[in-house]
Image (cartoon, rainbow, N blue to C red):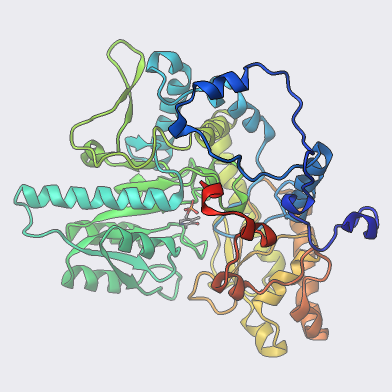
Length: 512
Ligand SMILES: *Cc1c(COP(=O)(O)O)cnc(C)c1O
């Protein structure tokens, strides 16, 4: 076994699967038998019984525990190091939020229990709806979508439903099909437009890093405009200086404005998408209102809308009844229908509520202030070695370009990012937005101390100096991590998602 040949404290390069460690008859669970399992099984109708036991690994509890702890130690996490992954907002998550979400009255509530049995949780969700409405500057909210991209999809279904109503009322002849999306947009925006059955019209970025206003005007004069999707501040970390003009032009053409509020960290409590003219907003609570979301989940993407769209929101709606209790309206007239099971990702929503109430109004304002101050502080520390793509004050994040480093040394943004791992830092977002050559997108978040920012800046400067002196090391980085540089393109083109030997043993009958 690997454990015998590996020095203590050093992780073997390959962690065996639990199936590979399995020995017949080993087990972990010793629990008092609260129910008579055999008798319960005998009560089950034969059609629901398995013909064979499922194939599960048989391992002792310490083996199980060490396996998962070792795997967790191989990952970089916000609890183990700085995580400046731009656009994704990896802020530190206070543990008290997890404790609140784990309270049995929240975590163990059954979604089909009568509303009278979970008034506390429903009251909490109603409060969160109000908080999100307040942050968005729009009156009505659904908490159902389970991610940012899901919120976008919900939002565009609302946009389409609204235009269809206008067609039905005879206000327009046909449903408009084009959505304006800047070329800096997050990839989910054009993907969502497509999924909603609409067409993307890309708008170029002007020399100040915003949407080209003339291109917006021209598109609105020549195309049938369903709406526009915009992140503001955008993915360059810059506020669009023309947003009020853009809103006027798009509204004038009959379109709606959709705000991709994956990230409200720069504006929370200071300005609101609704006040900028937006009609539909989604908020990634897992980026703005804490919630651990490494590795792709979990999240929630509540959507706020203007009053004229409120009747279209997904069902069920959480509403205050005449008698003062909170209830679920399961069949509101006009709704586009359900977009998720039950009420969405409730555990994540409880954490978001906890973030809002522990910060309060002033605390939320202070968070966005610190997010912006931290980003600008860091930008000043690194701009002479990696210049910003657009030379303006940034908001909660900024994008620098490694184009000069690449020209001088052959070292790419990818190599710089990988070498940062040897300094104990998660790589920044790379090659996004697409309009910046050798882009590195850095978001420090409001939760980091000045010392951490200083250390990161020193690490980044050291790596850029090393690029000139020793490019070969950078091409090979990371050198000190458990897993060295991965072939990312190949892992996408030839994914192998099933454990090696075990795969052959699992027949379809076992797998069901
Ligand atoms: C993260 C992000 C999204 C997508 O959110 P998910 O929760 O990952 O689906 C959309 N837009 C922007 C700008 C983002 O940063």
